Each structure stands twice: as structure tokens, then as C-alpha cells.
Image 1 (cartoon, rainbow, N blue to C red):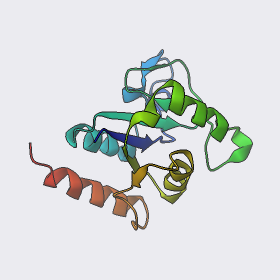
Image 2 (cartoon, rainbow, N blue to C red):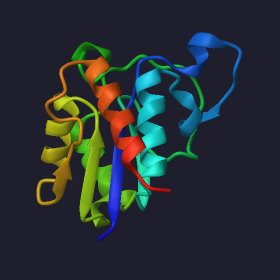
Image 3 (cartoon, one colour):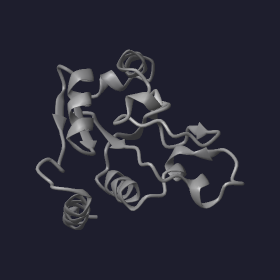
Length: 149
């Protein structure tokens, strides 16, 4: 069964620390501890593919280039985040709809959005039930430590 891991984007980006930095790969864009921990888990868990769900760009593969800072946020509709219709189109153009098993790493909001997009797929969020970022980080650490090399 082909598996896909989708990581919720973070607010903290490389340009917050280094404003002169030019375009970067998506894998290096988000510098927050939660996103970094999610990437670590996605790599170690050996999914067939992982990507980051950006509120501006939609689904970003690790090697896709992001050219500049942005502040769109799914939780703030006034920031003009990418529309669900556009994300649905990306599912097809990026062939993400071909994966049978989808794992989302993020909060309830992201999980519900992915359930809506992948309406007939198996959606799993190992962070379900976590109360806050600290609990999520602890759960991710536990998951990472239980994966055999």
C-alpha cells in the first residue's frame, strides 16, 4: 500500500532568521521545532512520499523551491490562504490521489481539511488526541524512538 505523509506548515521560516537568504527547498524552509520534528519522523518512518502543506503554495514536495517569504495561514482566512479547490486540483496534478494511505502530521484543523480532500482514502493522524504543541512533540519523539532502523 503506497503511503503519503503530509506535514502541516509552520509559521517560522528561514527568512525570519536570515532575511537575505534567497530561494530555498521546501525541506529547508520551515525552521520551527515542530515542523523539523515532523520531517524527522516522516523520513525515518519511510513513507513512499512526504510533503508539506503550505498555506500559500499548497502541497510542496521536499525539493520544490520557494522563492520568498509569505505569511498566509489556514487559520486566518483574511491572510488569503490557498483555496480547497486549488488543493484538490494539486491532488490530481501532483498525483497525490494515487496514495492509498495518508498520514497527516498536524492539528485537528489540518486533519479535517485532509479528510475533506482525500474523502475516500484512509487518513491517519498519529497526533490525534494531543493537547497542544508540547504533547505533539512528545508523541513525535516517542514515535521516532520506536521506529526500527
